[in-house]
Image (tube, rainbow, N blue to C red; front, side, top):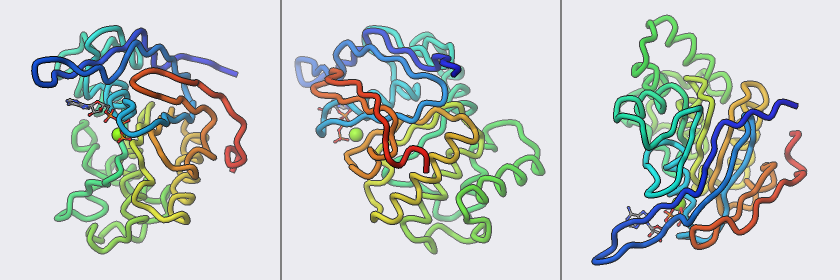
Length: 237
Ligand SMILES: Nc1ncnc2c1ncn2[C@@H]1O[C@H](COP(=O)(O)OP(=O)(O)OP(=O)(O)O)[C@@H](O)[C@H]1O
Ligand SMILES: [Mg+2]
């Protein structure tokens, strides 16, 4: 099996200024992620999950240490180069879907492609394919306020995956969903992981999500407490 490193974190430390002092949100994190992994960060609220995902997604940089994402030392990237890395190679899914309410489902999913130089016909093909992946091709012309929570999150998955990113970051993607919808979107993400080889990294408190992960990294007080590789019942589904 191919084991190509796609993300490497060496002594990644993040401190935030708080009043007169500093707060250490991440404390010397050492981790590598392999291309195609389906893994997740778990840990108590405040343990550093979102802070770490933001660094992996090049939305933030470490205070100390080095984060290498798809061959780029993210702290050395210019503002423009960092935006390019995200626009082309990294997809994001959040707890709140952040669909743009005045645009249709099609336009919401098309949005990331407008940041790349794709033609209208290339965009249409990619958007309709992404809507097919999530089973909502018939919803292209609907507005987000006509969707249920589960459908909204599926559209957010299509928007994140339409550019076929190498890395998909999902920060508590099931937190606002009921059990049936949570399982349904996890199955979709697992399928995309298998078919497109996308590297998925979740943060979650949700036991249902954990049953799909092949690796669970436990964070506590900004440190890796346990890095577990597991055989899960839902992995092959
Ligand atoms: N911009 C910031 N300024 C100051 N402190 C911050 C900032 N961002 C995060 N923190 C602090 O860093 C710690 C880790 O926050 P983080 O959001 O990464 O936790 P989390 O594990 O994602 O928690 P949750 O499960 O609640 O989402 C928290 O104590 C938080 O208050
Ligand atoms: Mg968080």
